[in-house]
Image 1 (cartoon, rainbow, N blue to C red):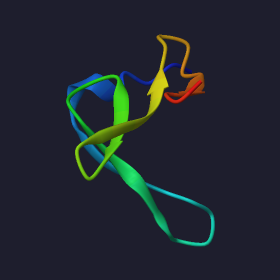
Image 2: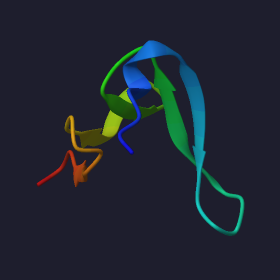
Image 3: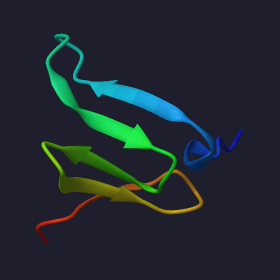
Image 4: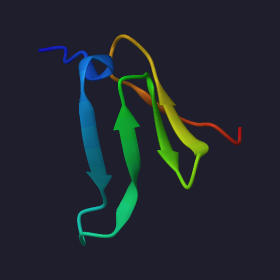
Length: 50
């Protein structure tokens, strides 16, 4: 099942509870204003630094 994360606000955390960043009506995860991960329409995450 595909989820369209660009439709809302989400907190993204690692399994241990540490904050990765937030999704704010867009197709990327930001931390302190910087894009840390991007994801495609299939839900695959990509490291923004690569």
